[in-house]
Structures are given as structure tokens and as C-alpha cells.
Length: 147
Image 1 (cartoon, rainbow, N blue to C red):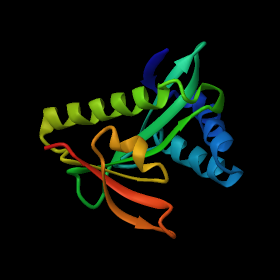
Image 2: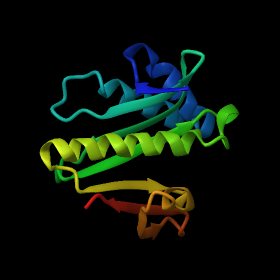
Image 3: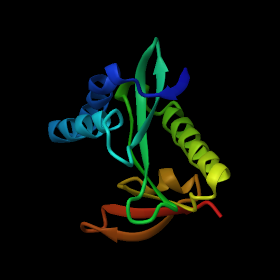
Image 4: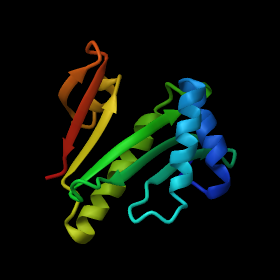
């Protein structure tokens, strides 16, 4: 298995991974978000995948916040159902966090990573802390300090 950047010709297969884990509307939303990586926006999201047999089996995105460039957001963390419970999601998140920390090392900008999730225990292993519970306490806003 290999960790690498999402390629432009893989945005549909990456969005299908999201669709397998959620609903078709999330698949469509993720497709637009994945395409934004290859657009002309000033701040573009970055997506990383883990591949097996030369195709993405897991995807995760991150972006510098437009409100505070010291803050990064982590999102669309998904593993294809047939590859779940093998440590692939853990490896993916660890690799993405490592990349964000390298950005911090270059220009001293990244100090905080935020994410929204329904699986706080998973992100707790990376030392994310819950900031807020909402939507009848099923969703969590979590943060990781890089300082």
C-alpha cells in the first residue's frame, strides 16, 4: 500500500469511496471538493490517498483555513468498506498530520488542526480533543494543537 497525492483522474473513484460510506449526496459533494484541488482557487484543498493495486482505497483532505492561516482543517477521511478495520485509516490520518506538521516546519504557520466527526474515539488516538458536541451529541468538533 502506498500513500500519495490524489490524481486528477481519480476524483470520481475517490468520491465513490465516500458514497459507499455515506449517502449519494455526500458522494456528489465530495466530488466537487476533490475537483477543487485542481482548480484555480487561492487556497486549494489537498487530498491524499492510500492505494492498493494502483487504485485509491482511502482518501483524506486538508486545507489551510481562510479565517486563520495558522489553522488547518481535516476532512473527507474515508476508507473503502472492504478495507476497513485494517489500520488503513489510522495510517492515512497519521501521514496527513505528518504532512501538515512539515508545512509548519517550513513556514511556522500550522498550529492547530480542526475536524468534525461522529467518531471521536478514533481521532483521540492522535490526541485530538473534543471542543463541542452538537446535533443531539452525535457530532463532534475536535482540535489538535501542533505546538
